[in-house]
Length: 373
Image (cartoon, rainbow, N blue to C red; front, side, top):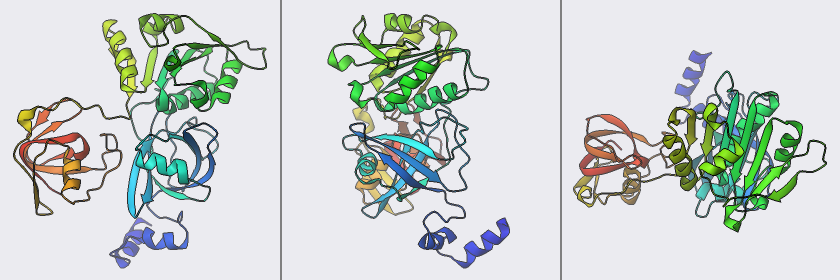
């Protein structure tokens, strides 16, 4: 079968077979994976929750992993990474994504405004090492902030679906209760699982909200609690006094991630902390690095090095290299650095080994660099 497909691909050159099949039906593919949007829910302000039906190539995801969603905007294909919020190994093959419409977010704003049932998007297999291990830890602490809720929510829903008997705490920070997605389901999980504790915090309103659950009550009561509402050691002791024996999973804004890391480093618990970041944290740029010329050898284009990432400099030079997340997660923008030195803008580390593949979106040239694009 593979040989037959390769033969047909050759006969249909220069376009792959899937380009012709999509003219018949967008989800009719041989190799490319796609998904059809079957439902779009905008009941939570500023975000849209999508249900997608993937093509047959979909193999499922592990709780905490991400996928890439690709859409065409003004004739240009763009891709971004999103974490499924549904539990892993579910009977329903649909994928559920909650997309927050970030200010200036090209793809997230497009999906928030335009996603409708019947729309077909590109899809990649699930990827990422931020995931629940097998066997499941006895004690699990899940911490998230803002749109970082999605991967840890998948973990929470997976543990609930599996009937996990250990202790689980889910601590989420949001600007208000109204913008927390899937609140109804969080309430249901808290009522049905007495060993699960759901804690919501809204420090932006100068108050903190703690969920206290009465398993026999019809609704979850919300009452104010002590403290500033921001993460610190005292907060950790209040919600999960057993945190030193737990596996902790964190995803959220940089301020929250840094606060959690600070506590765990001080307690020498780095090996029990697992993090996922969907924002690009840039190390400071040294003025001495912004000199020289960037040579895009495959395009025969050169430009003065202005200190920006190679992806940004290539785009400023009129080139259109492939990219996805723009934050070093998806590896869509990988290209070969032929000569010169580049700096990883996330870590500040420099490397000058010749003929090495690098990620354009997180690599900035230091002096003269030749990159094969």
